[in-house]
Image 1 (tube, rainbow, N blue to C red):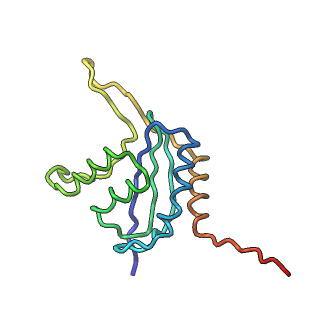
Image 2 (cartoon, helix red, strand yellow):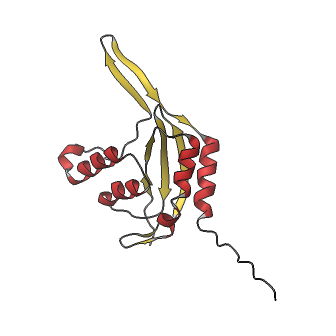
Length: 151
């Protein structure tokens, strides 16, 4: 059976790079836990982007995760609470989705001004931070050899 790739898109506002890495290191349990509906998270790749207020992460996992569980899982990853409540509302109320995806991170944001639109924010890729996050998550799966003391 081929499993579907699911995109998890946690949003972290007002964090420094060091705080973000500390949060990612705390995800070990979430990646080793066997979730009842979709099993253990099978990490494929990550992308980190700097936004105006913090960081956006996109995590590709090879799991078929139902839409209604994605906001919960992103909340477990310590994503922005209000965003995940709104995502869950859109999942549970299809009329609010209006045919659009519910789990959106905007790469550019505009504000309406009298002359038209004004660019107020955009994302910038963070390749070095992406490598650090990927290394941390892939490290969760590695087994450490225990040193045996010789008597």
